[in-house]
Length: 367
Image 1: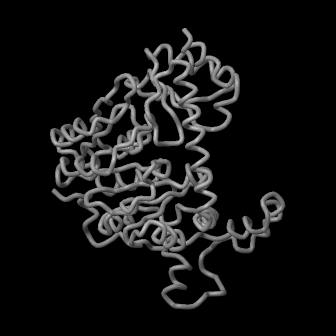
Image 2 (image 1 turned 30 degrees about the vertical axis):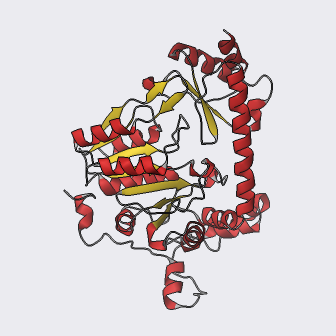
């Protein structure tokens, strides 16, 4: 059985619109008179310029670079990842959908932890896949995906894809690279490990030499939404073997990433010190938040993300706290899956530490 969806092994489909930037690179010169793209290049954008400035209006008029070369070059330099092992798309969510379309046909079995990031299940079911879920390792001080159970289910179901968030969402748990490699080795040869690393930048070894490696049989997903603060612009990237990237390009929307998102990403990637400053501040707040909650008696598992999880004694208590906080104007996250109904997830923003923001949780912990 092939690793990727069988119909994608044929020649094509090929991107019918590689774009002006790709053509200019191929010709080795600029094309000053763009008369064929049917963009609104002559839209005056007075209102847009007045609100956001001329630079945004200029970017808005035209398509971005379909090959995303500028962003990929910056990522390649920062991660020591070959260009052909990088794919940029409209955020990690879009990359999840791409990976499913590239690897799975309707009826294919996929495996994930019960209660993990729910967008994976949403896209998998929409792709016609059959979901198989395994329980978290759930005990005092611990909430972690069970890698052995994931491997067992993948082999029992002849799964085409296993999804793992690492660091995990919503628990914050981190499995080290050696554990990930053991999981990959335990999976069927034709099964792909979809490794969602949206919170990679917050792990203590984020700058390790393996951070940019393309691992066989693994598609690693990253986002610029969290550490880089570009959630509203929707941009992220995948690291994978060149063959996987080539297959994913066959089902990728070529202009899914806007010209504004590309320019913003290039700007942020050109200023890594600002990103590092933000990451350090988030980690410090996360530890302050975790320490404070533990002092109140909360069960807060270790987190390597930009949030903390709180394990409560029962789902009813978590539902009540979530509801009361929402009524008071504070929105935290309670996983929708019943397997994790007793868990609350709180972002490590300064507002979470302000007196009165989490009063309902404080009351529940007291008693």
